[in-house]
Image 1 (cartoon, rainbow over the protein chains, first blue to last red):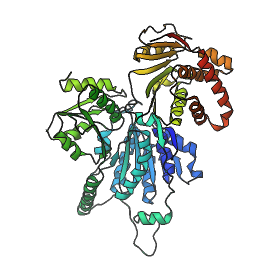
Image 2: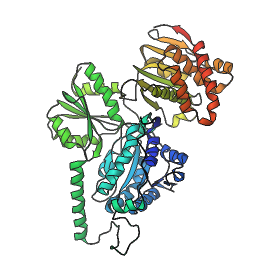
Image 3: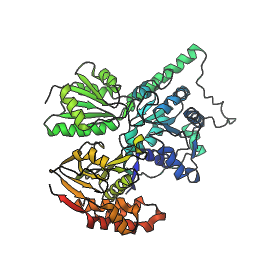
Length: 360
Length: 183
């Protein structure tokens, strides 16, 4: 049986990075995710796997170290929280433009600006729609437990290398700070130089006589060249949307009312569904696990089944726009949220649900 | 079985580590657990609390407003959490420093004189284990052998000699808990 350890979501990210053969972590401390680098520093993986762990002088620097490491075909990552991730957005655009793999963890806190240090989901729009200039998408994974934090690092790198695309693990202060049981899967070694040549033939690792130079850049001065690249990205994004959507459903089979919630909010909504079911109201929950690609089709399918939907988010209403896009007016879509680091209780959501649906 | 617990007191009383030991003990008997601390600027020298949920089944919301048990170690926490105990639930508190004692009559109220217990055992740092002992006497949600294993997981190997002291505080806490009112 695999070992089960009690750990915080943030610690799970760090332990998973070491055990899944990550080559480098470059970060800068910020609450509520500082335990990621603290754990890495405590574990000293440079003495065991050879993984590099470095505290950079800023988030701008961290993301550019990730950019550099990714150019060499290495598994590299960083983590931060909302204000720090804003500083990384320029780098993310360059990494997407250079088509490089990397994993970035955002443990969200309240904003805008420096905001609060308590949990929030206020970076949904930024991470899924606008984490930098230009026409690109991050692949966005939304963990809801410490186990997810552990598992998504490896899954993130798998997707990042498969599509040569940045992957964001969009977490929050609750999932980062909460301790839960985490099952450790067998450890994987770091990739050897030979393996890197195989999985990343584009990597800039030195030019042998046998091939042309590998060039990694996001600069294309000619309009036609840039457009051809944009079209290539479009094909990639359609493929991601076709193949990588992941979501989970809770009590949706006979549901007459649907909640849509991701991350920590999906956990809270499970309790809401249980409470409503105990009162004879057939509620269900759809949790998007990938936020990009978003489960539009699955929500559209349920729109034909339920009387109404509610998007529950720790923000002013961001994912609800995607829910409405999926629903296309087929049923009423409501929203309830809290902000600033305040968290809704299941009872509070039940009350809002009853009000929205004119039920008692 | 599902037990939803809030442990609340001052930073430094061992609230968070008590929750961690309880959670680890439950893992040792193959239960699901969540440990969700309050975190934020209020932790520096102020109040600290942690919500621990132990369950045979997968746990949904780690955030609650009503609890089966409230373990309360200062007046501020009493003011905040007395009303949050579910009817028929348990409120266990350390009477030292409490100026307004609980008034609920629909719950079990019990006292644990944990400062005295820790002094008797000979080390003020095991205060929180005295409280844990009191709780486990009233609600034996985890078996003692698993608590020992949980302690072993939470205490760094170099302090393994302290496990016996912690165990002594737990069992002395069990002997010293005082039930004030039954439900």
